[in-house]
Image 1 (cartoon, rainbow, N blue to C red):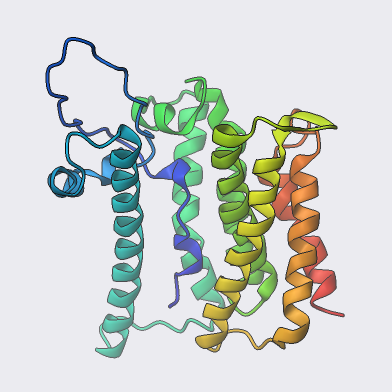
Image 2 (image 1 turned 180 degrees about the vertical axis):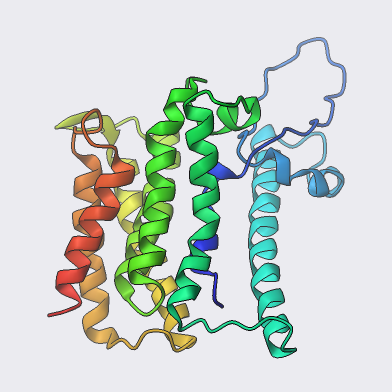
Length: 282
């Protein structure tokens, strides 16, 4: 499981091409379908034929999009685990020599986000032009957006891999709050965030609550997974309230009206790292 930490996928980096959607039956009145998330389309082509059986023509476009997103999720998880198991198998066959406890292992794990970091830099500086990347990652279609949130994101991934690796719960919780909590907060907030937070009209109660709950659950799930593998040893009676407190603070930080000054892809994980480092050492 050497490179598991570095393969944590985020929707920003899932799309580089689009697939053709199935045609709607001709009708006298054509209703505009919600646009499928560009971030998952490229993974959905293997599931396109399946969706025709699972989602009949009469079912809403939302149900069809759920099938596409579920297919993309399965594809990402399957691909990541296949790669990890391939490295393990090569090691057992003594074809590849690797020691996941060595310092070299963490640098190898950080190589994946480093590649994405370089891609974002060259495209954000307009040294090269990858329209698929710009379209899938940015919101306004401006390549300069790549130098903000998306770039900060992969830098945090590299920092977590290099500094905390897999023997510390700090890096695990930080990534869980950034990937799971903050990622879900954006999705839920956009769809159900009609009731805004009093001190920030760009954030909603639905988004913040979902970040708190999902971030907390994903953190515990990842910590439990790493403990099963023997990478971390935790006392769960004290770990659960600690993680809950970290999730609460991270949620408050994410809800603050400081997005124009500090991107939440930096503020949330850095605050989480600092707080978790203090809490788990005391």
